[in-house]
Image (spheres, one colour):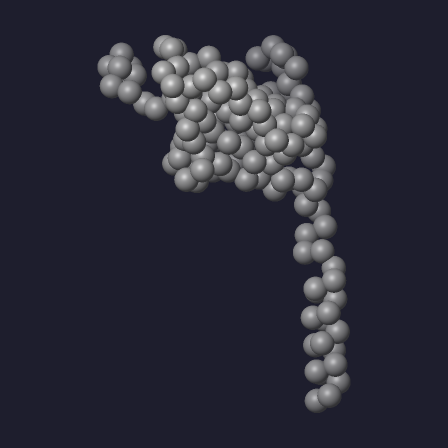
Length: 159
């Protein structure tokens, strides 16, 4: 009985000392901002693509767009702060694609290394003039900022 307690104590001690997931290398937070007013865009479904090799403006029929280059496709929904957190493991993908669907406006491909080191901000190319947004957005290391706009009556009118 004492041996079992001893082994259980040793196992617990090792579990506390050793890292839980040694393959996890990086955390990236994707922050989605309402392009009209700069507020967090909560509840927006995103598709996130992890590309093994950079797409580098390759033609659409290039093999880099094939399933062999796509490491993973994730479907996440932004929280109340307009954020989604990704845990990336080895080997790190070279590029991350963030697709907010038809509501997104701007760049959606980001280099993983740059995003981890200093952060990346997409372009705000939404139609119309931003009403209340005067701030320029800066990303923190490990953060990607993407712009989107709410679905409007006019979007559904011409589909």
